[in-house]
Structure formats: C-alpha cells, structure tokens
Image 1 (cartoon, rainbow, N blue to C red):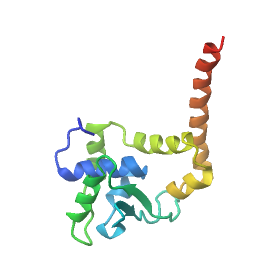
Image 2 (image 1 turned 120 degrees about the vertical axis):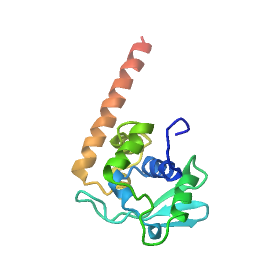
Image 3 (image 1 turned 120 degrees about the horizontal axis):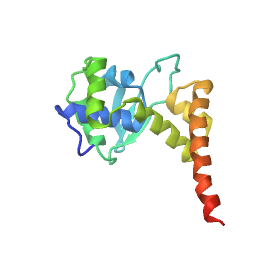
Length: 159
C-alpha cells in the first residue's frame, strides 16, 4: 500500500476497504456514506445484501487504528450523503487494484483463506462473507492444501 500508485486519495481508501473486509470490488464500489459509522474507534460498515446470491450479513468492523483504515474513513467523510463513496466504474476499480496489487480477487481470496488459517469456523466466515457453504468449500480446500504442503516440510525436518 505504501508503494502503490494512487492517483486520488480515495483510491487508497477503496483498496483498504476491500483488503480488510474481503468484500467484492463491486460491493465496495456501490457503498454509500450511510453504510458507514464510527463507533469506539472502529469503522462499522454495513455492506448490505451481498452480490452473487449472497445474504445480508452483519455489519463488518475495521479498527480505525489498522494501517490505512483512516483512508477509508476520510473517503467516507469526504462524500456527500446519497453519493457513492468510491464513484468509479468497474474497470477503474480494477485498474486501481492493478496498479497496487494486481488481481483484485486476490484480496478476497487471501482474506477468506486467512480467516480459515486463523481458526475461524465455517459459520463465522459465512457470517462475515455471506458466501454459501458450497462457495466456502472452495476456500476451505485451498486452506487444507496449503496446510498439507506445509506439513511436508515438517516431516522432512523430523528425520
């Protein structure tokens, strides 16, 4: 994030929001300021009904002290009610990510697989992401494969 090419201050907030929440790029692009609030130094973000057959999930919490979270809050407070916080087209949203991290879905993939690696349960990750159990099964498989690969190094070092 510190090395990325951001042509507008809101670009950093857009990337930070997707990074911390693991939401879809389109879910961030449609966000209105009314979906955010600040409570006890935490950004509370009500994503709304998730895209692609998703469900309504509880609001997501981002600590304001997290690196670059302030960029999210600045973007929200610099947007008039009723206007999108990140008023970019889908292509522009993709390009913002491409200049910083490349593939945007990588943020979502990383966030979800890291939740599983950190020991969060399927119901907890379902509540955060709104994904179906079938969709979560894909991410669980990625976690298992990563963990299995790591176990190979342990087996070799035990000899």
